[in-house]
Length: 105
Image (cartoon, rainbow, N blue to C red; front, side, top):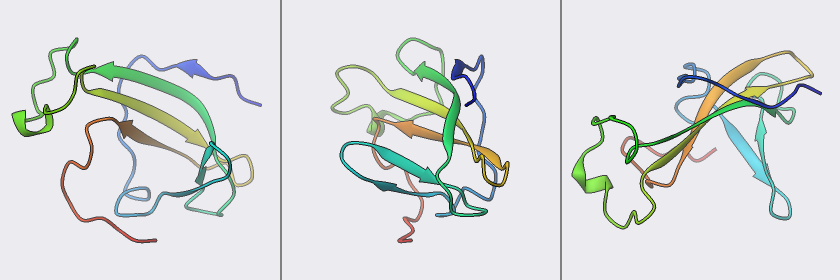
């Protein structure tokens, strides 16, 4: 198993995970990302947490700042599939839906 460590910068996901390409499933209280290449469960092998309140990242507009008592938190994850060796990045946020089309897959 790969060691989980902290990345030192933000990474963007590829076109493969955009537009509904990255999906997942839940069981109890766990969420699992499914590999867009082979469908197997991916492992989180790296992460980066950043907060818009602490860092000078001004690209987000005021409309997303409502109801954010703890600030705007983003978690950037590096995902790895042991079965097919694919890796990519994704982000999780407490900001809510930002914009763009939702994909039902």
